[in-house]
Image (cartoon, rainbow, N blue to C red; front, top):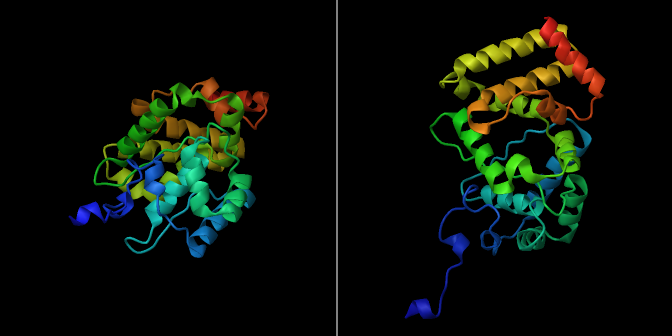
Length: 247
């Protein structure tokens, strides 16, 4: 029979899915990273290293390899082991070295949170993805404080709020969370007009935690906000939070 002589690689039998193929070495089998894709990854990494840009959109035709490239990048930044090695082999030594130099993944790797778009409540979907990743990675990420600080320096809570507002605000306003979003957005706008950059960072962090409180189990308490602003002096954070109470 033909099946005794010919086999079809798994990655050609169906489309790659970010949620189900994450951290699977076999999902990387046969992937070839073209020069244009490598340049795109390095360009994005350069923006992260040199600017405050933290949200990126990849566009291209169906079947062009966007999902596969995302799986490869996630594998490279994930825990050290077979998947990271397979991702490094797919990307090649030069691209791998440059990406690792910028992203600096520890042996435990980054916490990767895949979210697949669909016609549903985006806030609930993102909250669910956070919860699944938290369970997969251990309670409260299971990471030493040093790694949390490193991740915050690259993509803080305030950056995630900005990403949602730029990319998903229309969808959120059409969902059941529209009233909560509008209230939080209004509070942030007033803070931007009257407060300091630290006030704005805290306001965005509080708003984000408030949006996902039902699914994440997090509270906007001093400890959580302190981790999100670990680069700011403790007394400055305490004073800024006191200003909110006074206002």
